[in-house]
Image 1: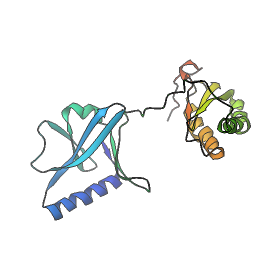
Image 2: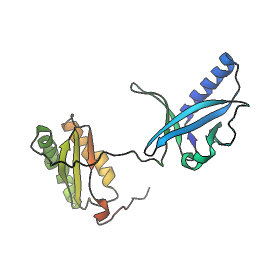
Image 3: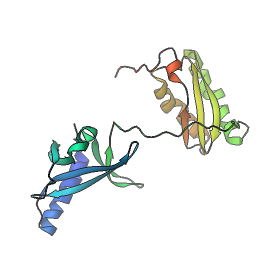
Amino acid sequence: MIEITDYAKKRITVLMQDQIDNHNKKISGLRLTMSGKVPNIEYALAFVEAGKEELGDISVEANGVKVFMELKNGKFLEDVKIDFLQTLQQTGFKVENPKVIPEQPAAPTTPANLDTPEAIAVQKVLDTEINPGVASHGGHITLIDVKDQVAYVQLGGGCQGCGMASVTLQQGVITAIQKAVPSITNVMDVTDHAGGANPYFSPGK
């Protein structure tokens, strides 16, 4: 089911009214289109003028707004979320599709260099702040490489295959590393979680 957030609906309503007041157009809804291939999908939104709907389009209603899509894209777009962002970095509509998983950078294939100042600083964080805590749960985290301002880590012991590994990474490891080493832009988990004690186990929500 397509979701349009309340904030996005307010912006859509304002823009629709502008079409009526300043362009004398009656709008029947939005048309959502997509281009490109997974995972690099690009989305576009456009107003559909009443009487000028595309033949063959399907339509659904989301938060009081009619959304038109090409029939061939209906199943792929059926669960998208349309939001409106207004930040210092970005202003505009954003389309999120749970069917598209963002492409992650691959683990480095060149030999690791753990003697750089960044790698030494990251290792210090793991040794003094991270591993003493995860050791109490039977786990440990190993630094594999630091390349292009990305730290690559591997989770072992009780952390491998654990359904809470992503939570540990997001709330603990990444935060601690980036706080201590601001030049690190991302921390990537290159663990083979399928080989852990609880492969792909997801905690209940």
